[in-house]
Image (cartoon, rainbow, N blue to C red; front, side, top):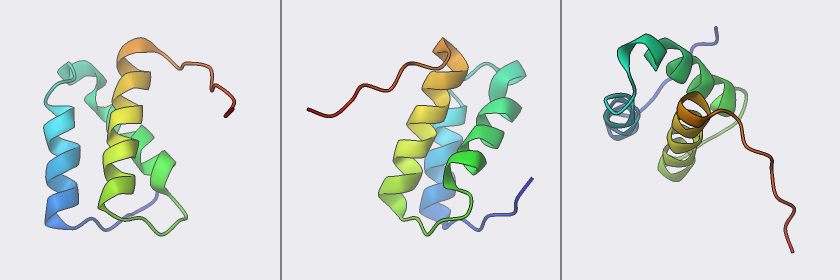
Length: 69
């Protein structure tokens, strides 16, 4: 797994979202967050979106991407 450096605020966002996920799924959630952010520059908003997307995928399965209008 890649190593990614987060700010304190970003880590707090990730952990706050993780607290809403059953313990047995948290490792998969954290791995998914890293996958979504790996290899790119990211800010607080990107971390928030990745955390929410990863939580949704882990809790509800992947959802089809809808095309933009």
